[in-house]
Image (cartoon, rainbow, N blue to C red; front, side, top):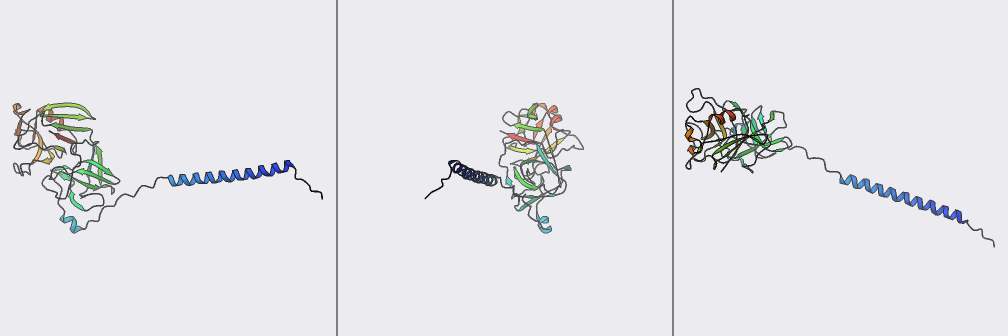
Length: 279
């Protein structure tokens, strides 16, 4: 019986076609797997901003106002009391509810003005549509979160920072991180010390009758020893003093007394400017 043999050329062609098909299939699998890998490797979309808790009119009326006169018992303390911020400050264009944390319970209301000055607060932490600020109330170092996603706040930057070293009894003014001036100052006594930690310029007041200073600059911090002083809540401030012999000494009830040149320099700082007081 005669058997016709398949030519070698035909066999090679068939093998080549099959190999090419298998290779193509392998490439499809590889590219498909790579596509799947890329899809799996995509970062998850960012979580939506946390919405503030709804506050009823009754709850709002019962919240304390965060001013230099009040104490916010539920406020979290400043986690980094000696750290500088980037200069970001925020102003509430309407009275804003202060929360313990984004999405957390309300703890206070911060008004649009403090001591007849617009409220500007330094920002120490940010999250989408939220800012954590230093508060002007007791206890010292009180902080809270305000919701900024409703467009009812104004933001800007202060390029300045004030550092007060109680051991050296000296105030140093910085702009953009560079020193622009430094002066000896009078500080609190051992019995009524100037409180340490970071605070901020709360207001600028011009007394109707100048006795010891043409301008007084209340800060967002208070004496730890005096509950009240001269009719006020023990608010610590920066101000001038006519007797130059006090500079470089511990002589005050907690306020910081500045020579004229230093007072002139700091009295022009934007409200909300960070002030860091260290031992």
